[in-house]
Length: 251
Image (cartoon, rainbow, N blue to C red; front, side):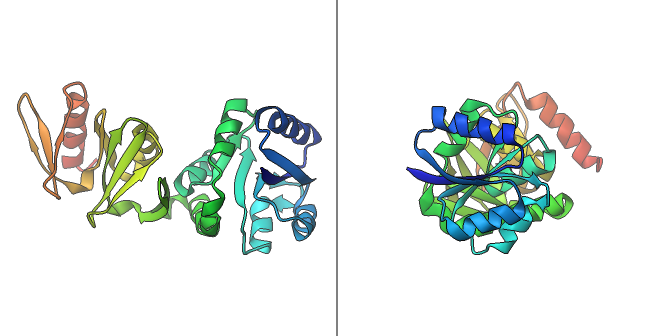
């Protein structure tokens, strides 16, 4: 069982989340709720939850103010929010759970399933990454990766490539380290497109900064800086060549 609190200022939203948790996530035991930063601070003085479901925008400010007040944080965080691009991206880069309003039961079950109490020691680092992107996305340089053996914090510029294997993704760093994450390669393709990463094959996303050479021909392939050869699929080759042309032109 997970002990949970909810901080949500709208009564309708609060009741809806409670009902959905009761119906779809019986392992979650709600031990309290609050509707503002001040009420949330008082609640957390009395209770020690395993997870907190937090609306981002509250009547007396943003919930980040509350999180900064109560550090150190030793519980998991799941943000519950209407769609906001920066907030969603910040959650993805920092491995912070989130659920979009209106709440989809399957998304709620997935967020709850990802709670891993053994990783709570890293929650503050993940929140720092969240705040870093949320406050200044143009200066963002680091991300967290939820791997099979823990959470890694890596510089995006140090990632050489991603390789898919079923529903897992192997992430290769320029140090030679390999991290295996429980996310699909599609998730990383979408997340890192603004950082010069490109999908060249159904199994491969590469950091274009680590390309050494493209070998043409029927079996066209890339040679990376670490000497690994990466196939460029026939279907993706025209778009890839167009991207290479734009890079050469400095666009």
